[in-house]
Length: 341
Image 1 (cartoon, rainbow, N blue to C red):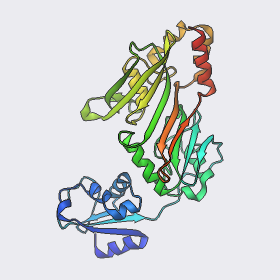
Image 2: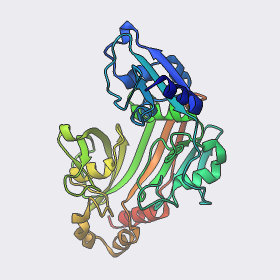
Image 3: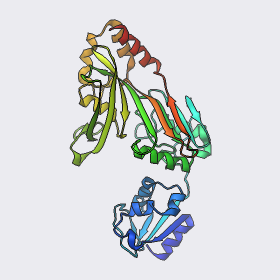
Image 4: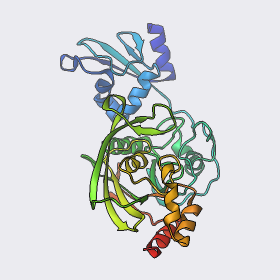
């Protein structure tokens, strides 16, 4: 990158420049930048820095690089361009939200079934992001990226329950760190209620695997070898035995795509109503009494609900805990299963 190009970088957004000291030699580029005091104070997370590197906004020794894992040497010069916040591309849409909590920094939503969290192929509108843009206005602009403003975690379209979104860069930085840590060292609780086929032979347990894309059906996730996947850990506890089915509480130690759905299917207890991972268990519906069979037939989705969400407020430090009651369709399913015992 030439000196003229570097000047142009300053014209379009703030540019931070660093010289690699001896103790930082050998570090990865993204880690080095994530540890710079100026970038920490600017609330730039390591994931945001990685995205900026991959977008070509970093110059190493005067030349552009897109490799976050690039190893540095003493004396290297690093320049990082941070563009001005861009307006969110998704449009504001007047979509009703069930707001559990809101302040100047974040908002907690109780998401209904059928609502996609952020725009993607096939779901460019009618998403939670569209609703948040309308509700929060300009305060959400640019927070966390153009495509997913404010989003720090997601739950599947047909999963109901609690989800938190950031309204400021500082809150996004703090919440992103919480969810990246998955409650291992920081304060975060995520518990789900799951109605599954069959009854586990133990009261509780942990499922530890590696998850990655299915080798043939790319829209699905699967348990894969370590070399092809990412670590996934789900803790579970049996809450009720309905004979042909049961109620399980799941607590996430990691947060992979479809993690609970894949894990419960992996141990032979897929979610009731899960057409993707539990299709082979449809015949079990015939073993249910009429009321329970009707409740399962009325679901039209996997029986999974994000019931508990707890975290330390990223700005105030207050410990927060939210609980969501079962939505009507799952409450009806529970009542029908209890009546069948």
